[in-house]
Image 1 (cartoon, each protein chain N blue to C red):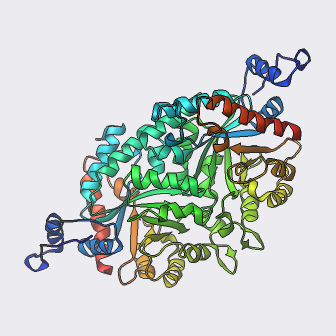
Image 2 (image 1 turned 30 degrees about the vertical axis):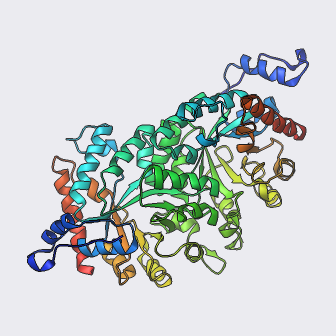
Image 3 (image 1 turned 60 degrees about the horizontal axis):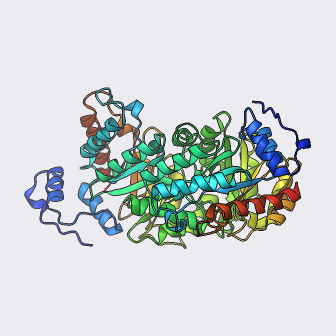
Length: 297
Length: 297
């Protein structure tokens, strides 16, 4: 797939003005393939992934406290943040809590995501091969996500059906950002840390064009070692903001020549304001993160 | 919660006749608490869990190949097998493959399950605490399941929200029945097998009244060792039938004084016949398994 740019930076006085026009001129915009994703990062000068972990009870007061309100809110957040986001991550749990209606709202949210962004289902799925095939169908076919997060505990056949889908990404848990990461991931497993063995083993099942890993911003030093193990893979990084990770630290620890990072922010953007300026506040927060990211590019 | 029996075995000539009447006489039927589940096993002389891994394309020819057909089929399978099943396991992947409609069919299926059976969401969920709270709400509150399967990789805070729900079970992956179990679960982790450490560690977070483990029927010898580690916990055992595990072997390896097992069969029961006798065939298959189980009780 090729992306043809008709715009040139020379006629623009500031970069965001260029970006906005360039996106409009773009004939085929996509962020699915690795090179396209890198191109979007260079274009937007951002490796921000906006996490749509939306809850009805946390919606700003001007938004209806129901499903339509949630979907409208998500659409506004997406519109406000898409100049600064190269990826969106929909956390399935937040939608499943509302049952079948939640799945409808998830689908409506997904359908509003721009095609020049990577659409990630943060679902942490994984089961025996026969069952993982159904999950792959659910998130790569029925719902047109570009990527899914998966859990490694059940081994190769639990990841294989996701890896076999063309033009889709599998994002495997490695070193997570929560307190519980210390319970199993850090222990010594066959001579290495368990998360190191997970990365080493899962890398045998797919290459860097199909496979990313989840690494938490809360453990920048360990992520630096992970980057040394896998210099070319993209890393999906939660944990900046509410969970306490530093954007600067994780970028210094883990950026590679192609950037190779998607740093997620959810609550900090979604709930930047609880007033009727929530769109502007979300845009400002995303822009602030993207501006900081631009200084590292 | 108390279950009061008005029937007595003395006036019955065969056990199944007694069971059917006893179930009707039962004032409060439940299989949620450990003692109630054991009581149901004793009453039905069965520790069968029927797995509702239903696919539209595999429905018998007499059933409509659509969502209504799937739900009708599930209801008929439930009616046909409930005299022999103490638990039902709904594999969420099989419903999610159909998107929001699939969640509706899952809910309709769940609502048809008898209250004297344990209702298990086979969902393999697990995420950071904040997110796992949403999953717990999804499956314990929005959908009234009694139990959920969870993946241990993300540690304590990923399981804690499920464990905090009252009168609900958490069924943690330990030693799974698929080929991929060998990739991580069997390796040496801090001086023991990883699955042993998982069991040992997770047992610190909840007791045998709230916590079960998934162990595959395909590794009966290892399951025998697991039983020695945790003499009193219930074990959910997939892998009998299509995956090659033996009911006799796993029962000899892992039954305790209270039985302590839920052995799952899905495809063998659901698709026992592709003809218009599928209900009778499913009942016969469930009865056959229950009859074999009765010989071990």
